[in-house]
Length: 147
Length: 135
Image: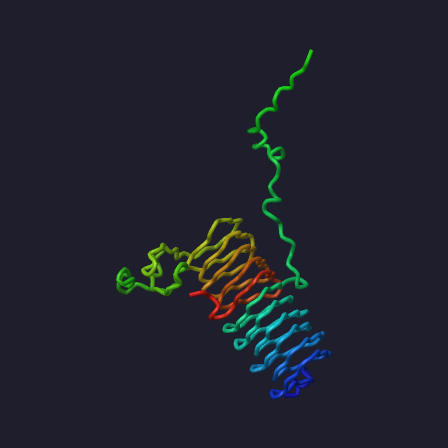
């Protein structure tokens, strides 16, 4: 109980409906309904039965309830079995438990950015650079020289 | 219907048709069968990909493991999928999709369950959930 209080000093109760912009430092446990924007470096816990509508930017997010909106977490996003998330996710680490629902575009990886891709077509070399292909190439047409 | 083709006493496993999504029991040793519902051929083998593999469609009812050196460029339909290497393409899985720490995945993903390990890269539109896979 005390650990939970230390981790999440702020709690929005189950009967609370909050509309607007929320900023915090350590952590927030959301038990009720929230509509708006959250931006923080701390932890966010959306408990089972809680509903969040809007964009979230946080350090880490754990979802047991429902979120409709885009999620941008610096370290990780955890979706438990009862979670439902509709929106885009950008994070470094993603954990989705069996039974959770996630619908949206995901960018997970180093700094939430995907590594640059190597286009397969761009790797192919011109025929002049490949010896076997060069041997098969027809000789250049003879140049007519006027006397 | 389909169980009549299985020898009595043979070990069976349950698979989903990759075409019509119907469930059927097949012998564990079977490598391919014809779906009794849609009459299309199904591959039941498990695959381990260790090299570059680009095909028009990669479909199996078994499990697919893309190893560290593997690089698959194809739309994939599979039972379970484990990505330790690279995968590019639309993936529909009937079971678990695991992207290991060395894994790199780019494309759309439809699966009932997803595990992304720390360090893995995932970029694409995902539909995860028990009811998200089309039946």
